[in-house]
Length: 355
Image (cartoon, rainbow, N blue to C red; front, side, top):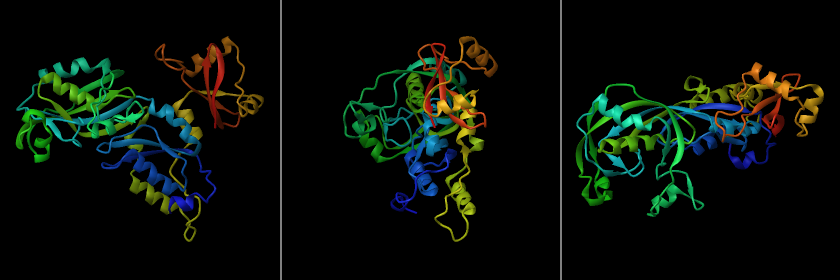
């Protein structure tokens, strides 16, 4: 069913989150478009871009649950990746063309540790040039593809884990003529090049470019490097084993659609909005009167001591760093319905959003 027909339908879908195992070759927006068609609604978004080459966890919000995606995208991530040492590319991954091919015959554990150690912890990372970051209102990748010089500022990220998963694999790769034509100063001869593939696991903060980690490790070893595979295995507390493929989603929707009723509201395997909010955030139970006022944007009134006691019981930590915004709280009505989000600011509850 096309979006033109969808626009004539009441667009008030059942809200919730989907966890999709994104396939290789699709953009995150491609996945959103497919879910829109299956869900018969335009009210669909995603909680953190994955490059077309990458696969794995992509959290999709439908209806009012799209309001949660800001916090989904801010959660820490985990990836499994393969870094190829010996060849650098203009995109820092296998989607680009080679810009240097020094080659690499072997790498020891000690060499890899020396390259990875400075990349762990709180670091300043220069994002990959071919990225969605905006420079003077334009995407960096658009400027780079137009031939403009792009200089991106370093920004703080946290690498909680960067470890080798298996022994390095010396292999031989063949570069295309296009790679040689693109390279400066004849740094990329066409033909076979000895390289080393290394499988790693990365746990990092939001905003980290795993491609840039590969690039920086390759530069540290003096051989260049790029990603050949990237799979996101976790976003916050959402793990890959809970994800479904687009094919599985399509089959589930088809199976749940009553025969002969193609215009029936699709039934998707959603994590309901309330369940998602309670899973992501600590809950604060309101009275009937407070819930009624909150529906109009008014936050509950609680004393400093009441809030302190609630925070201890709920295990609530408002900030993990002084510069961060206070963490959200799920505002729950007496019947268990999650009505929206709150935060504690200056010892007072304040409304963040109403669903």
